[in-house]
Amino acid sequence: MQKQSRRNLLKGAAAATAGVAAMAKVEPSAEAQSPNVEWIKKIVHKGGPPASAQDQKPAPSAAKPPLFNSIVTFGNLVFLAGVGAHFKGTIEEHTKHVLDELEENLKAAGSSMEKVLKVNVYLSDLANYQRMNSVFLGRFGAEPPVRTTVAVVNGVPGDSLVEIDCIAAL
Image (tube, rainbow, N blue to C red):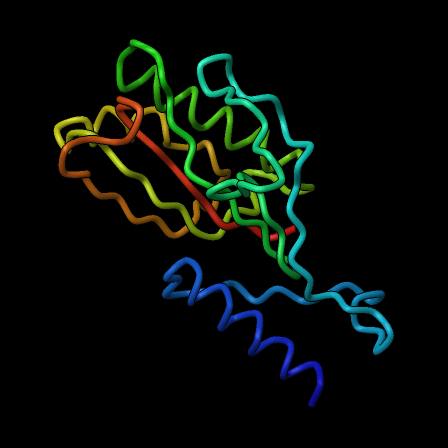
């Protein structure tokens, strides 16, 4: 009964947080199944890869918490905030940069591109869809994740041509 409750909690939290329509079955490790271990715990990863020089901002004061975290794990899931490319370049250059950053963040959290379950792609212009796909293809292994792609009215924040976020298994 306890194992089923954990599974339902995990599915509900992921669906509510990210709007996930379909979810892969993720089993907790043997250690996590122990009744004395709280395996469902939100962990904020502060020591992720360094941001690019253009993305660096002063550290927030204790009185003013950050708006969001870049990497959070919850149970056996990793949630990555959207990554953009904030430099002049083509959609291909921006897409490669964003996917490279996502891969680096996933590794920092203990996951990988092959374990990504869900991806959201935000394009500044839907006309870039095919060109973005040419770089995206194959980056998540032989079994790509579920994906939603939308064009953002008035563009992606920070003048990026593409922004991507994802949910992965550990």
